[in-house]
Amino acid sequence: MSTGAATGGSSPSISFFGNTPLSTSRAIAASNFLAGDETISIIPSFTYPETIGLISGQVGPFRAGMDTEVPLWMATMLRRRKLAKIIPPSWMDVSVLKEVLRFERDPKEASFSPDIPFRHAEISQAILSACRAGSGTGGSGAMGNGGESEVPNADQVKL
Image (tube, rainbow, N blue to C red):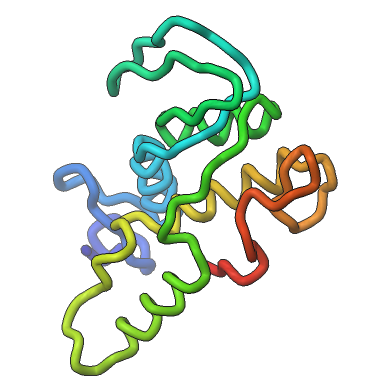
């Protein structure tokens, strides 16, 4: 991390790609972008029998009601269009997150919990945001089309 003095400012900046410093907002945007390639399971509400070639690899085929793995960016896009339900990763369960919190607060532990991925904050924010946006309620609950919660205890899953 370098200081903004090199760029003439007083705020800190972060270097992601070589020596070019990024502002904090651009660093957050870059981190969100990189998290978009994480794979996640969805249950599509449509059928598309062919695979789709992406830069990151093949996804599909899609069969209504059958789970499939897609990049996070595609899962959130399909969820917002009400074409799929997101299956939350197991680490987003409240009991797992409580155990992670206990582990990371333990002074004997010298590292981060291995139970959550590196970009867990970006992934969970994207999932919760997509579930809220696709609910049609405009509220803060992460509800699916039928009223059941896609993210159990979404109000307790905090960033």
